[in-house]
Amino acid sequence: MQNAKQYDLEDRTFAFAQRVRAFVNKLAKTIANIEDGKQLVRASGSVGANYIEANESLSKKDFRFRIKICRKEAKESRYWLRLVDTQSDADLERERKELEQEATELMNIFGSIVRKTE
Image 1 (cartoon, one colour):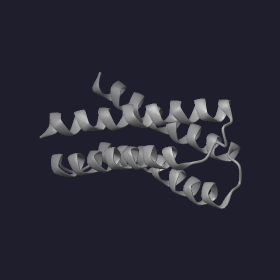
Image 2 (cartoon, rainbow, N blue to C red):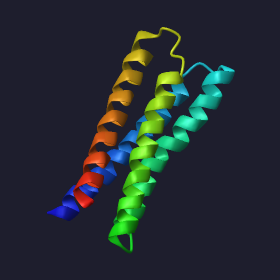
Image 3 (tube, one colour):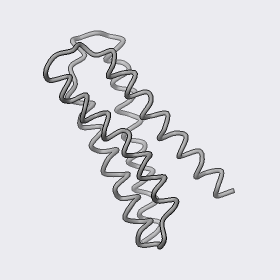
C-alpha cells in the first residue's frame, strides 16, 4: 500500500510541474514574467524530481533531507506564483490561485512527512 501512496505523490508532483509549465506559457511575455517564469518552472520541477530522489534514498537521513528539499521547492514555487503578473486576466488569476493552493498543499504534505520521520 505504501508504494501506491508514493506513486500517487509522484504523479501529483509531476502534474503540478506540467500545470505550471502550461500556465507560464500563457503569461504575457514581460521581462519580469520571463524571469519569474523561469524560476517558477525550475522550482516546480524540482519538487517532483527531489521526491523521486527521496524514494531512492540510501538512508532515513537522506530521505528526510530530500523531503525537506521538496518542501522548500514547493514553498519557492508558491513565492514565484505570487510574483508573476496575470495582468488582471480573470482566467489566469484563477489558475494562478489554484496553483498557489496546490503548492501550499504540497508544502503541507512534505512537512507532515518530515515530522513523521523525525
